[in-house]
Image 1: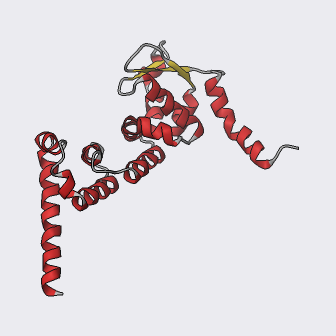
Image 2 (image 1 turned 90 degrees about the vertical axis):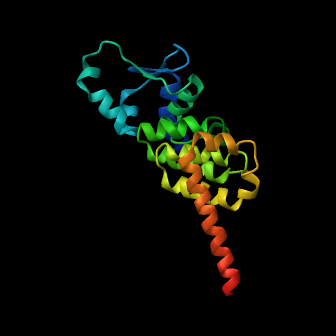
Image 3 (image 1 turned 30 degrees about the vertical axis):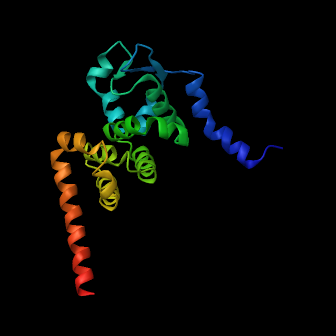
Length: 200
């Protein structure tokens, strides 16, 4: 007799199977880097994303004979991973590691908070001195306050190392406002620690 976990796997795996076997698909999503569109189901897209729902319900989309939407910001493998997430609601560590940046931005663009949460948590838990400035820049695109605060704290705590890295000068030239914010926060923290030492 099959176990409850096997039944659960079959139950939740049905949507993924329908996607992979292209069963009753009714729309095609085209990536930005090639013409190999990936078949999908409108109902899944609409259920997972308000943006997709609005897009599919628009008069323009209903009137169109071409059942293809181009997601120019995603490459083929990124789009495939994005769609698999919409069907099964999970991502492996490897998938997140490989595609976290485009998935994070797609989650913001298509209003999929759960995917954005997963990407944010992965970015925060994998912060290091070599990627912190990139993550700070990324957090500024959708104005993600929790990610911005986490990475800002990390940068301030590791400023001695980050400020002398080869990434720092190009970051400052490209993002002067962010650089000023970080330097001000670092100086405030340094000043506060000096005051604490003086008074206590």
